[in-house]
Image (cartoon, rainbow, N blue to C red; front, side, top):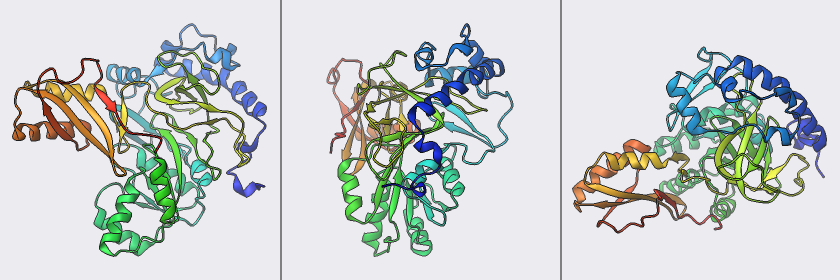
Length: 415
């Protein structure tokens, strides 16, 4: 049995047909305003009859837009490429994500809609939240910070790194909840154990920015921490989240999600793996059929927790070679950029694996200079471009497969 207190608001338990009707009653007028007020959207959706978009079938006829398109538009027309409903910079904040792609945050409370996901994970008013997402330039820290404060939580803006300082803050402030990438909590718990520090105050955690592997979730459970996941992007905010039922990820109430055949805008049958496409109702920075590049599939039925929105299986990889490492996107063009910095390199391939419960990057590079000092220079270039550390393995010419693959994600997501 569930009660009203188990849910963030009444929207979560609506009849699915009522939710669908509400979204598609709103969409035509919303599209009209977007096309009239944002030049880039007006051009992108040129010729579309907004008033006819009253069903999923009609929505599927609209063109998708990709992150590469967002970047190109912003490069051509700074700062936001004509995608915002005002050419002015936002009154709140503006962020720079890898790409680079720039995203605004307005003044509204819980701009990214993360409070609902936190609530579903059991976060409540009065909780102390240790937030280890970055607050510098990228929006990760701010996304969860806003939702936690909207719930009435106290937030420790820890960010990543500075482990010793973080352990001091944890020991003194006794946070009972954690948010961050999946493997960073393990780093803190292990370091605390080595140093004889007490981290037993942590009781639950909400992760994003990467896959929570079943083995790591089990380890956290054994250490007394219940874990949940939220799927969010800088462009669209929260897309889906886990509830106490831990059966798939429930679509957020503030957007429409489609699963399409990768590389197209064509919806796939329920249960088939495809690319996640989202349409948001953000009145200042909307996204209309944004192709995220992430793979997932719709689960049948509704969650036992009582929430009635569609569920997806969660993150199932990338539709392109872009992958997430330690919560950061790494793009094929970034790896190509690393190689271009060194004339001694020819074919390169970034291999992403796991060492224990940590993501590991290894750049395999064909080189005419098999010198450790040169490898160190390449490693620095890799860190400069991706903002992540990795090891370099220099190999002889014609050693790597000639298959066009620049990034190989060799992590096993089933364990």
